[in-house]
Length: 438
Image 1 (tube, one colour):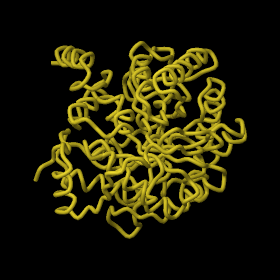
Image 2 (cartoon, helix red, strand yellow):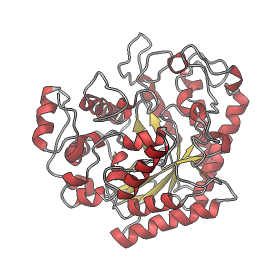
Image 3 (cartoon, one colour):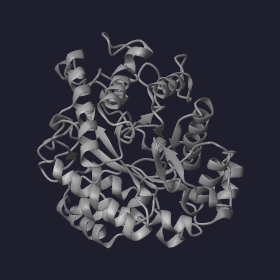
């Protein structure tokens, strides 16, 4: 069965029917150009750039030359929302030595890049995008000096097998309290830097996300659903109270991990790995009641089961399911949550594999009320002006991301990821990197 990214509507339609994925499709893309209000701010269209980490910052956490280049291209691309990449709240929470890290001492560099994003967007498109900073602590995947230095919520045999992480690396409740304080401080710094909002990151098995499945942990951060979501809820509540009324406090939120209880969130406690919305719906309603108006929804773990959160044509392994089935799980699952909590504006994920048909599928979901914004990740590396093309008629086949996973390959191997296929600069970086790592 064909696993290539779709280059024609006919190809997509045939597999959508064959696999019974039931993804809607609309030739009318006008709904994607509609303006939407979030926290008294106008978002000029329904297209969003997801947080794509470049691993190209400076040692002190400030944006580097490649970071600045990337955001200039993205800003000029026309998307209504730019979800700024993972930015550490503490040094021990950096996922690599080049991950961005916001502090009081380097705040001016963030003020500069936010200002440049908005200026470039206005110059190219006539409007400012909403720019949301993703505040993170990498937890299990912390590697601030280039070697693993995990800080975990609990031991997990699915990841660790017969070599569990030393128990000294399990964060105490007091240590988690301090991480929460650092995330709230990052929210305040993000507002001071000029960002329109902050994302208290809770996805892809970083520390807040791992806590969601801490069923067997003792103390105030484990066991009950209330305890497992405590750090996220308290960080969001604290950030809301510590920032202005029009500052957006949000989260990129994992609603499904894709591995069984008691190690996965969003699955049944009775076995299996089918998406179970009960606990995610409870959490969304709690966040709504705290005042959250915008959420960015995702699933899976890019380190363990990347086919769940970013279905690929080529990657490090061959999943048992067809990539379109993974896309369908994500998009239909998000639509289920939107029906349960219609008050929250929701950004989708996992769209790049749809290729040239992504705009039409997005338009179908938005038209039907499945979600409010269409979030593109890998696509923005290959096709930074994707939004302009969607708003003027649709994707161009020669510009789409082909989901070859080379950007992820570079990142996992310690390089600076970009589109090896569409961006000559990264073609050269990739060749040099491969040569140096023979």
